[in-house]
Image (cartoon, rainbow, N blue to C red; front, top):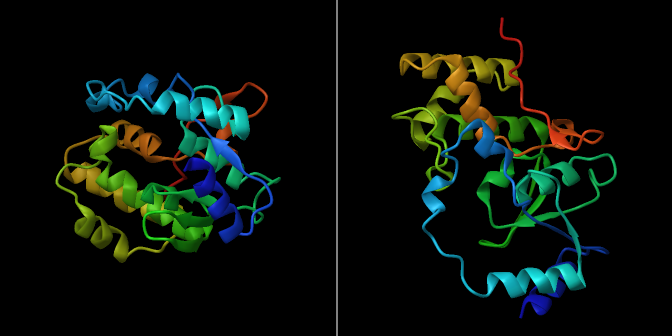
Length: 210
């Protein structure tokens, strides 16, 4: 079943090679926010997960980076000089829209080209709303509609959007350090966020705000 599914997308997306991104056992986000994904601790993984992983490792090129999630691996590869503009990111995770790349989403079988400006907007949006499934809440009382409203009337440059997001956190009596932590949790890493020499993530730094 898995073999047929992978081959199906290989043909559908006209891809010559396939690389499978995998999680490392260590997660750097838990180091900056211990409660990250803590709500999943009591959820048992299906028994089939282990044999599926073994099958993938045996039959495909699988890639993992120290302390990173599979999403980060996808983001780094897709924005690297080697693969940029020459790959398709296949996933079912809407959060991957924070990565500038060509995406194909399994859940609705759509293909999207996400440019850097759009990816940055989606990143700032995610910083506001958080992700409760991953255990971080973003800015309290800010849902999807309000987040869109916060970002609607500012220039879609990263400094201007960051300033708008920062102001919203201030209204909630939260400081910039808290907001920065939320942004780093929401940030799916890109090639510029990975230190290839020392094999570690480069924590996202906010742009200069005038």
